[in-house]
Length: 167
Image (cartoon, rainbow, N blue to C red; front, top):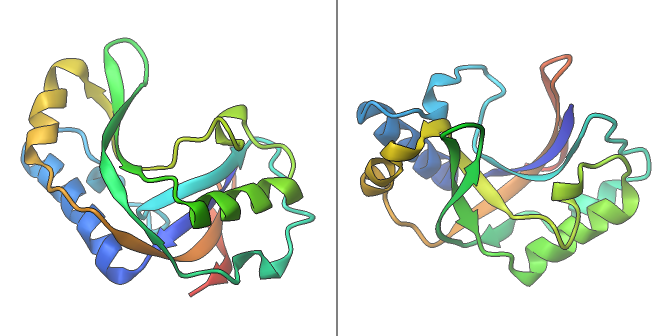
């Protein structure tokens, strides 16, 4: 699988990592336990087993950095009695335009990352048991804004990231 991701500036990255640490300190599942150097807070714009960026222009990323706002928490099903807990990102005009432009130029993305089906979010924990969701929500801080400063390509077969734009 490959994915195109927006990464955050230092302050926002640190805030999300603090969320990860709070979950871990409370004995809950957290992305803090995923210690790969490529693991960092991000918003996935496109993902797919056959994701092809062959037509994505370099100027696609000229709008970075882009401000983002968080609007609360969201839960996605992740199997029997398990859930993904994420920080929901407000789908503001600038973010939606960046996302739509990317999908006009790439192919092979999963349906749930396409415009009109995409839920922008930042994952905090995977496979969290349902009975622990309330506890997890209680330990998290509430923030309303952040900044995406760069875009990257994640390639899971090679476990590598490539900077696409921004800094």
